[in-house]
Image (cartoon, rainbow, N blue to C red; front, side, top):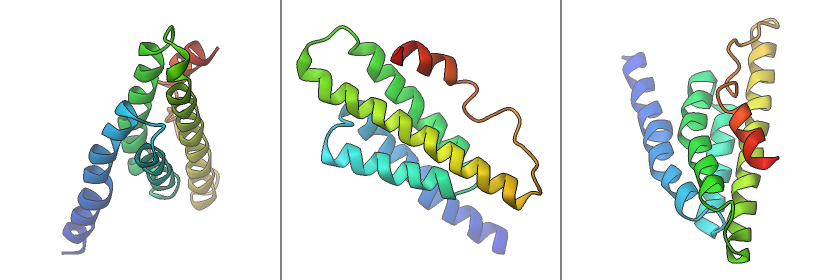
Length: 129
């Protein structure tokens, strides 16, 4: 019964929230709604454990990286959107750091392999550099 209850909570507060809020990251990360979505998802990723971290990263980082690709050569009107996307990526990288430090602390120094950012890091560096 407890496992079912935990699964329902994860579905409601992680899976559904990630899906709903993730769309704000693609359309308007610079808006108040986009920034609050980034903050909520980053906090969730930092504190929710490894499955939550991976779920949030998989839902958020591709959207922000795609936004950077689409607007790489666009006008200065999109500068705020680009800056918000870069801040969002930084927030998720910071959340990953916090989540992994907590994991190591709680699991006697055991490190996570592969690193949750390993599939994104080269894309991040290509877009930001």
